Image 1: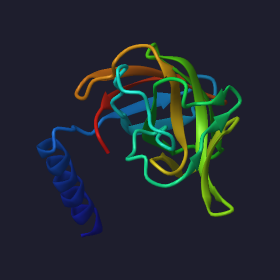
Image 2: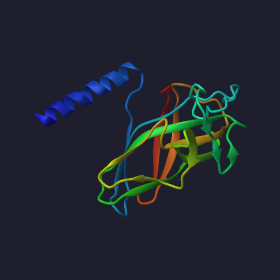
Image 3: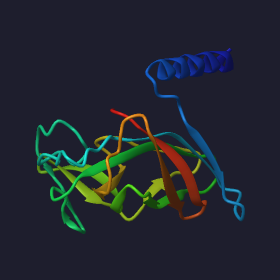
Image 4: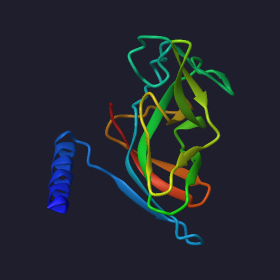
Length: 183
């Protein structure tokens, strides 16, 4: 009974996403040496327009409301166009894995970031790695962990698919296609 309900809910979720124009994407990855299995779901990137400079406090393409410190190891991010990427990474293995880096041809610099509340101010900070727990998952989402694309080199238009290469400590390199869409 529980499996039937799960299948029905999955089917309904897929139909809702398809109706919204965003088909769910899943990329399985298995590290040959370790047999580590990762699954990447719902990879997406916010649109970016080279002509529109981000407003202060708007590094993730939000409304610009509120305060966000956007300091990274490369300084302030308000100097160029930025966007962010999100996804869910599931680890069905018995050992944790770590997302170490991301690469794509849409930006000069790509960093892993997290958003934290410090002294009543949202602060975005680079992180060295993002843990994907054994038998669990991590969601890269707005307001949390994400892939930050800094100094975007071209317009990133809604509906297109962006190839992104993810590098994991155990699973190695994984290719995903991230759909460009609004949150």
